[in-house]
Image 1 (tube, each protein chain N blue to C red):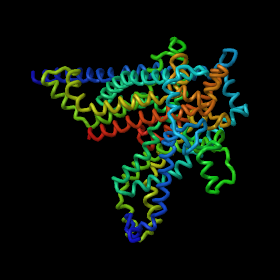
Image 2: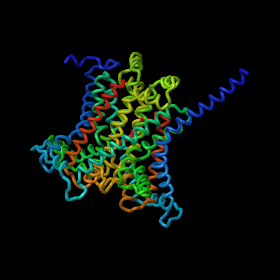
Image 3: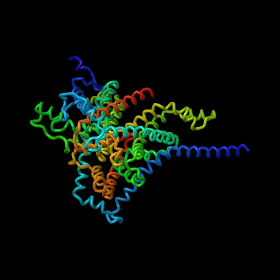
Image 4: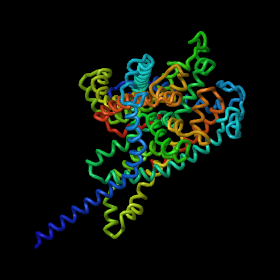
Length: 278
Length: 295
């Protein structure tokens, strides 16, 4: 057991003395990962009761998810909710990313005094408890008859996604030399053209990862949807939440698995892009 | 003549610079208009609404009810109790893991980081659902505990405070680990080395040198977790099974069930003021853009 005597820290602690920390950390990591992924095997169980490990395997909960157009409860139209979620998430990209990007560009170039005032306001959607944003929006939408509308959902989700876009694009622009645009403009390019042809290609990876994060933010959002979505436009997370309050339907395990695949796919994409950007 | 021309140029330049500033400010306008119209105005309206009583006139009745009603006091106590306990458990679990990750080579730490990021990126609802399944009476946790002889018979972990706490600690842990790990990585290992070369034992070197240097990251993490817990809704609603009522849930039920906007607004204003106060303190200690909200 010679390996136990190697030094593992600056203070000459032997691995033997640090073993408890390694074991404890492994347990904590295990507790972090496993509960996030445990629904995957469960979703293939054939039993009504979610046992682990499943005794028999089947796709019945996936069938339930993909082919249950109408279930007795009424709102269990999972595919319609999934379609709404996807549509809203894609539209959120096209609202949050451009607005957040031009705002980041404006903010990074403005005086530091103005920036100090505007930045806290602009990231306020991240600071204010989301339940307050949700009931505020509900009130707002009642005035403009936007409750239960796709537009309302997209705007609500964009509000939450915009600060993330702002932060990502601002940090990309911080490392960008704005003089390149000045050069282009001194050669006769207009400001929009200089931005589109010189700046944009250099921050495009940040823009793509900002878009992916906007998508995910919208797709995972629950509380705003709970208040402003309804009727024919329920989102998948909203339907899941409402179903969870009542019973443990194994269909939700199948839906969860699909959600895990979507979010980990997007996470891997952002990580790869991040590496490329560097 | 030269002097006049220079003055003229300066005036023109100043005007150009001003125009630049307006352009840049203009670019932030769409963003500001959206935030203003859809967050600041509605919340301002909620603020006003909290001061309007049942008869439609100005009154403090909504706030008085909050102070006098046992139900509200219990909700405040529950909210603070759950938030404090969650934060505490996150610190107890997160600190050793962040410390471990900061001590091993970066390559291995990045692999461990995947373990922290998987739950961070998995939908909140999926993780809450997973705990609901794991902790139920016939769930995996009970089965394993009974098989190992830790429990004589299965206990009900969900639909009570302990289930809520377990779920919330799991959901909040990455929010503590990320800023804490970033801080610990930045600590110069030579500081600890210097302490031990001057005769400090490893334990003493840790507590007198490393731990104080990791405080900014720890405080940032604790405050983020605490603030997010205060406004938490989904996990206590599902894992608490109606027995754990936190402030956000009361706000929601006031509106959904009782259409009582005044009471909901007053509670919302209290929640907002407490949150802003904590964030204000936090902003004095750490950079604001660390506060990502995924709840």
